[in-house]
Amino acid sequence: MRVSARYNANPTSCQTNFDGEVEDYTVNVQGAVADTQAPSAPSSLAAASIAQTTLTLNWTASTDNVGVTGYDVFRGSTKIGSTTTATSYNVTGLTANTAYSFTVKAKDAAGNVSSSSNTASVTTLGTVVSYCDSKGTRVTYEWIDYVSFGGMTNTTGANGGYGDFTSKVATVTQGSTNQLVVSAGFRSTAYNEYFVIWIDYNGDGDFTDSGEQVTSGNSTSSGNRTANITIPGNAKLGQTRMRVSMKYNSAPTSCEANIGDGEVEDYTVNITASSASLTTFSDVTVTGEPFSNQDVLDLMAYPNPATNFVQVKFASKAENMTYRIVNTIGSVVKSGQMKSRNLDVSSLNSGIYMLEVNDGQKSLKTKIVKK
Image 1 (cartoon, one colour):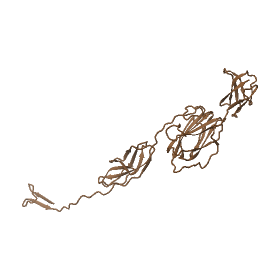
Image 2: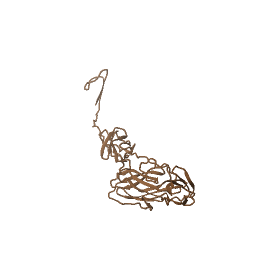
Image 3: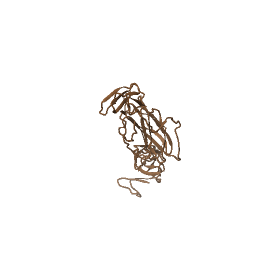
Image 4: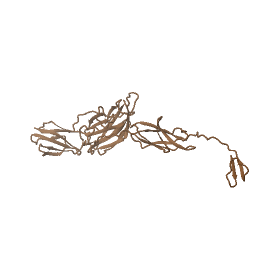
């Protein structure tokens, strides 16, 4: 390298004999140094805003000796997108109720790629399914007080006619047999209560498909009622709804909006896959009355027709029960305390009457005929 200075004029590179000075130097020219260092791996990868078909990935930025120019996002081993300097990515086009794993890699301008971030494993939300409403209108005297199924147990009092217990999850396996236990609670007298239980096996938001009514029965017992429920081998995997409905004196339907005296409770059942057909029961099998359809008469009077006396039979053991006898035009012709189960009807005219017996909670009725 030559440096030349001349008085009052520009020098040339090879000019001699002028007022000034010339200095020569040596310059060592080297090639450019290549960038071979990869960025650090992104960290703290996590999923947020998880929905049925979308979610958002967030991570902590990588560092690099020169500079990070972007990130590649992978679902499993498949690259699904890239960002420049953003440390988040919106994932779309997913399938509801499906498990996924995601990783992220950083890159720089020289094409160096980092190792993978930690793996974010996530399951998208299931499709939102709406179910019909069903509710008891009075729980003053009877209610559902216990439900057990698939490792889930729930002991409650009256819940205003409906209990949303879908936060409680029973886990069962395709092809397995599991014990279901329910019981009724009573204020005092035990009445004839019908239980019907449904499981939405195909997850379509109703209980009307074949096999989804899993058991039913009635009795006047306040003890446990049990049934062994076999889960179909083709039941849809994942979470679904179980409805437990109890109604006084008649069987409820799954979508009965106002069932009268009684209660409805909803639960979640998680159905898992099985590699073989299994028959499994809880480690502790609860004893109790099996579900059955029983002939229960809350109130009966005999002989009928009667001449002088009728024998009154009813399930209630309440004290201080009252009665009244009403004729066909609605007039009360006889009333009083039920001091015994024999009722004197000798003073009545021949005809048809309605006998009403009240145990302090419910009024029970039956027809009698006086000869």
